[in-house]
Image (cartoon, rainbow, N blue to C red):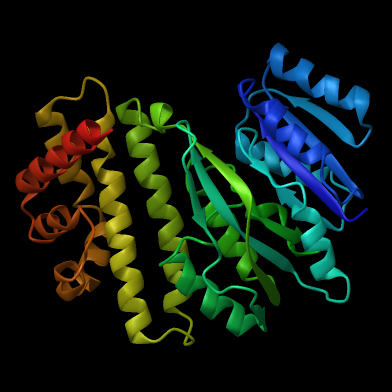
Length: 345
């Protein structure tokens, strides 16, 4: 069997049929479709059973609610294909996706085939994100690592587990970090990049990522808020430990990576704006506390101010005030940006 498609399913009854239809109708037929039902969900279970009834390539595995990352790991452990790919249950792929991948692999032994994606919102607006380096073959561990890591910190092409076909033998079970609630995709892909020797980049946008503007992932309580910040800190700390010890990366590359991580930490710190019932004082205290963590201070110390000065991001003033330790000013700017975004919507 060539391909195993792994789909974690959790309360996605509204979009699940669309996803499974796109998999059943793949023009390339030598596939298995592994549906991991994450927790009790009678509606989703019945939808999957309908597909199993008409197509024996579908399989269902039921488990107690353990999260998408655990579901992906279970799917990987039960897969039979030479290659695996992950699809989220509210997303879908174009019907010729796996045929394109199979043709690319006919006379080649690539470890990873990566393709572009389309971001689709609930207003049916389509935004296309083709792979940055179209139809390019990357070979050799050093070249793979150099090109992909630079891309991770610029274009986000390699920051998701979906949108790629992976040689199963290159995946290790410890790539699935069960302790993470966010950034598990980044953690998985970074470990994967260190284990592979070749990548084919396909420009075509084959993966459709559904983004519901009305249900943007928001942190709902202080415990989760802190957990998210700790998770993103852990992942970037692990990645930077590896990058800093690798002579492959030049000083200018490291400077850019430091600034990228600095911005990401600030974005996660200011998720406190989305916590229901958190007072202004609580928000200030949270920001102050996270801005004193060892990792944040170490990254900020390495940031070159010119990066902030030249940044076109709407959050630039927040980056600037945080850099200068003006916490209240930074919070005011962030709150104004949030208000502007809500009005614009």
